[in-house]
Image (cartoon, rainbow, N blue to C red; front, side, top):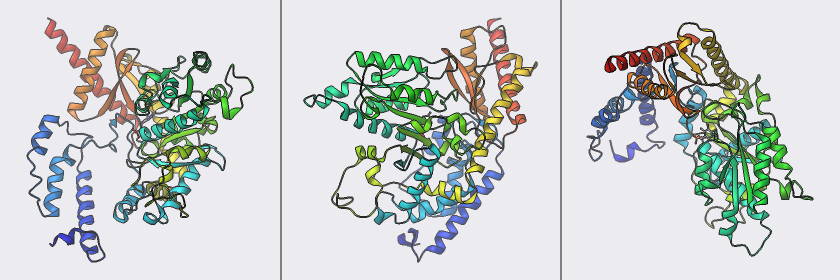
Length: 503
Ligand SMILES: *Cc1c(COP(=O)(O)O)cnc(C)c1O
């Protein structure tokens, strides 16, 4: 083959089709033979395979490259579609979105300007408008696709910072001084990307004030009002409140409606309207955002329409391949805080629609097409039902464990699930608090090393617990009971061997 034969062109379209077919066949054969979600490979064993590859000596052949890919990657990949994968917020992906990927990569539009993405720009805009409407924002709403919740949260807080600067009433104040006075309000359950954003935005992670939560691990609106009040009285500047709609660990949904009341009615600032004294409310719905498509649980997001900005991760609870996320805002004017004009790309005089004005990225994948093909092929209700069923499963598992006098007796569950996570631990009655933490950390390692299931770990009430994140609506309660039996068996083995060691 000539070098140019490797390019996707009209002349090589047959080569392209052959390679794609080989790739799909290879994947199909691989998936058909999978037995468990993970091989259990260790980083050391993986390094002995990946390390020796000489990148300066190409294999020169698709079949050989695919065979090598199996050995280095597919054989050891963690498969999210396996019903016993229940660790993080990874979903099995819908086929219409995978079909879209073919076009996303091959056409390779870049969504910064119209002259690189004609048509695509409007498809993305229509999906944003649709999301805006589902959130309940009015016609002034807008937004942009991003690489994930972390970026969406960063952009939301960047916009909030831009608005907060406008509230600085002292025109002589140096920017750095105003920045140093800004505070962000979140909870200990909020995603760490809030602190990361505070660092990136020049505020420092310590500018994030952790508001106390209620027994359900939701932000306490009274405590928020109190914290805002104290901040103002100290001469500081509340920049944003971050409410989480679905915390990563417990799936808790902060009381958005009541938080919105607090954000819109600043205490001690008489005569200030919504615009001036109000605090920017960002709702991080990276996880709970899938409820926008739910026909049964949309009410859990009540109040979200009162936010200034919202993060939605389509690559979590909308069953989309990574990456697919958006930030949507109530007032498109706010997006000007990320606008920069370049003569060659988006001059002020530009007449064509462009997306780069609203985005932190420049060159940007047409990830929106995945959601588009999903909605056009199966529809939003079907997507919502996939998430709803995952939530049903978590509820059912909770009650199964609760009512089970057998292995259930050796488990503790942190909280009744709101969404689709279950935080739990193996703790037979004789096991003390500290021993339980060590034991559950070991259990998680052993489960992972065996590869028959994948569960997550987290901290709850200062101890180490386990977590199941259920986003696979094809998993059955039997699959999950099998995961729990595995945990239970490993837990008892570890306890027995510990007793032997002591004896
Ligand atoms: C996953 C998650 C994020 C981060 O999203 P990424 O897409 O992983 O960058 C932010 N907030 C919450 C609540 C999340 O669950």
